[in-house]
Length: 121
Image 1 (cartoon, rainbow, N blue to C red):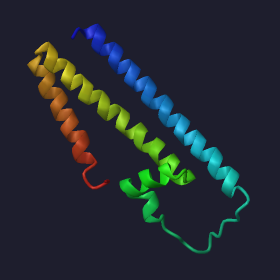
Image 2 (cartoon, one colour; image 1 turned 90 degrees about the vertical axis):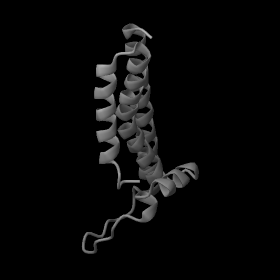
Image 3 (cartoon, helix red, strand yellow; image 1 turned 90 degrees about the horizontal axis):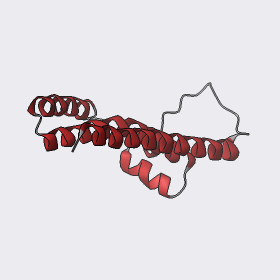
Image 4 (cartoon, rainbow, N blue to C red; image 1 turned 30 degrees about the vertical axis):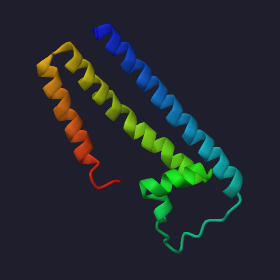
């Protein structure tokens, strides 16, 4: 694994992740506006988000049934996952290069990123 190969893989990952996430959010948004664009909002009563918009399993199940809000949420989750995957790929690449210092740094960064998500899923 050379630095050039690793940079190429990471650039493809970042570009693909952002474009795919943007496409999912756009598609879900267009579908949501088409389905609910004429609804009137009631700002006098607070209604929290249902579990189908907060829990990972329900979000994915809703996206497979083409629920617009779930599709938007999957796009946002993919956008969050993209830089985490970037750090994981860098960790593997540095391990293949046997660069211990950067393996340790990447592992710490990855652990912090995953720790920050501990209660979200």
